[in-house]
Length: 73
Image (cartoon, rainbow, N blue to C red; front, side, top):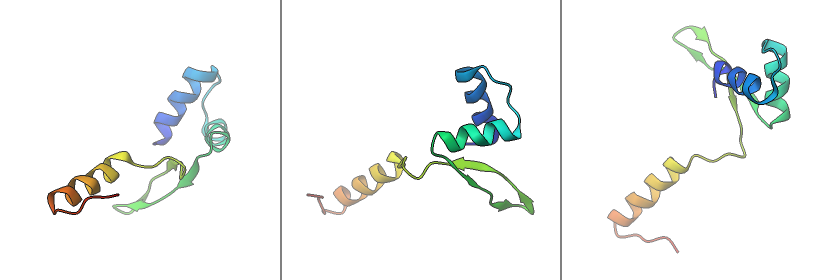
């Protein structure tokens, strides 16, 4: 989740004013951690929640296994 998305979520659900500190505290309260990769020479900031799994990736794995004749049990 980007910082902009998290700030929108904060203002919609709490009514608080979104700044860097309030958004960070809200994200931490929800279980998110900061992820700061460098993309094209610039540091970008995202919030990630390790307890949320990407279902799209898991579904792709299951589909590929079925196509190759390997069925998960």
